[in-house]
Every structure is written in C-alpha cells, then in structure tokens.
Amino acid sequence: MDDLDYQLLALLRTDGRRSVSDLAKDLGVARATVRGRLERLVETGEILGFTAVLRDDWRDLPIRAVTLVEIAGRNTEPATRILGAMTEVRAIHSTNGKWDLVLDIATRDLAAFDDVLNRIRLIEGIANTETNLLLNTRKSPVGAANHYADLRS
Image (cartoon, rainbow, N blue to C red; front, side, top):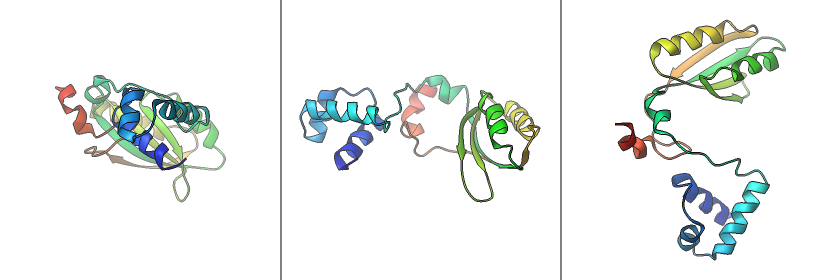
C-alpha cells in the first residue's frame, strides 16, 4: 500500500458510500485510478468488506467493554469457539503478554453485561479476566461516535 491507498482508505472510513467520482476529485486522480485501487484493495484483502453503521448499534447496545482473558493450558481454541458463539462478544483478538485474548463486548444494559461476564468466567479453560468499560468513543473505525449523535436521539 502506498500513500494514495492510505488517503483513499481514510476517506472511505469517514463515508464509505462516497462515489468513485467524489473520491477521485478529493484525491486529485482519475476515476479509473480510484476504481482500480478499490478493486485491488478488496482482492488483496486489505479491505475485508463494507458495512452499514446502524442507529441500533449505538442506541441499543450502549454498554461497551474490553475484556482481557487469560487461558489456562491448551484451551485457547475451545474457549475461542464458545466465545465466538456469544452474540455479545463482537470481536476476539489474540495477543501476547499476560493476556491471551482481548474481547470487544457490547450489551444493552449493565444487567446483561454482568450476565455475559459471568458466562465468560464459567468457560472451561478461562483462568482469569480483567474488564474495562468504555466510557466514551472519540474515534472508531466507522468515525467518531459523536458523528452519529444525531442518530441516537
């Protein structure tokens, strides 16, 4: 990837529905260049997909957290399969250091959040967890949460 690719991706992160013509104009290149770059970024796997940010993603699941998970022994794969089936677990990342997994969790309220934490702690092979609630989103892959503030009300 070069500087033009990074600029293109930055524009798409703020508005993934922008037309190829608008992108080309802002980047100062031909439409064919933008179209070719987009096709290549998808083919190489740099762009994994396109999505819509729904009002309900912000309104109906306001409790967000990051949970660090320590796995005992060789239980990573079975634990990851169970975690992956939990709808509240939005993403699972492997990592190094003390913690083996980092979970992105979203729930509708604190009671549901407490329930999901209890279920996670009961999974065989999970030795320890540490959870941090996310208080405010200042930047996210889909743009700042404040950009969607008008959609939440």
